[in-house]
Image (cartoon, rainbow, N blue to C red; front, side):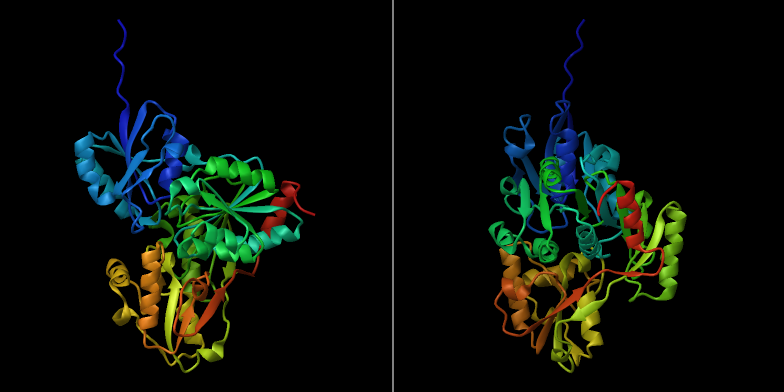
Length: 449
């Protein structure tokens, strides 16, 4: 007697437009025993109520896959008799992950997390990955520093960035950025520009998008080595030959409180204690002790993030509005960032709280993230949000704006007051140095001059 045909297992992938799509592409796209009913969206406003298009979803999904707001999880599970909910986004506390697990299980579903080994791609060229235990540790500046070092060795470098596909997914399957013209053509958000512009200014070609199998194939044809510039605190999409993970002594204790930040720390070949020029010695030691306990095989190096202002005198004795990197101060949990530090060091007369001037879209950000201090997070995922940011800045009764976002705000909006940019880069501190570790890696792989 023939066995009756089994119905596919119905799953929902909980995501935030990034890890969720990658997990689907790697594990579920061509599996006839699995039916992905929907993605849910969280963290980023405005990314729900779309569809994962057929061209990406594959032949098993001729109508694509709906993307719904995470608030609909329970009703979706009940309505569609969901068997399993797959959690697939990052920079979230362990407790919050389990709250979502509880919701899924009460709604009748199992709860699953896919690990690195099942989801990482294999590149044909060596890969150095840069990850972190939290958003805002300094991954991108470290990746830029590494790219400069590698280019000095005569190597062709491709930077592959963690995804930020918030727009038209069909147009974002593979993205290659070599100039600011490419950013404009792709209608990049502030959040994308914050990550891509500094790389372009450093001379790097940046790849991003949705289908990382195709992205890696293109990048490895053009490069001797790939640098994975990780987003949030996610683990790499590509199997690293050397994995660098940043920890932040300005947030001591966060090394093991967030998912998947603890995962990447336990994966690390090298742990970089960042920002030691801004942190208390006791907090640097506390973080170092945690790294040694959690991952005793990791080599520990130290780094600083020196901050500079384009024109400190333009800030001295002035009323200042500080605009900070958005993700660092929202789901990254930081009350302020480099801009606040730079304005304080430049002896601003007053750092003005933006809240009284915030339009409703920006006021909602403060409501959602009440930890944010007297700074304005650079929110600009969509044109309406960018306009709200512009209006809030123009409303503020201040003399000057200090902008610590890596993108050039003055080029993206029309502002009625001067903008002084704050910059921060990676710098080595002490021994063992990061450069010595990279030299050893290159020698092992017979790379460089």
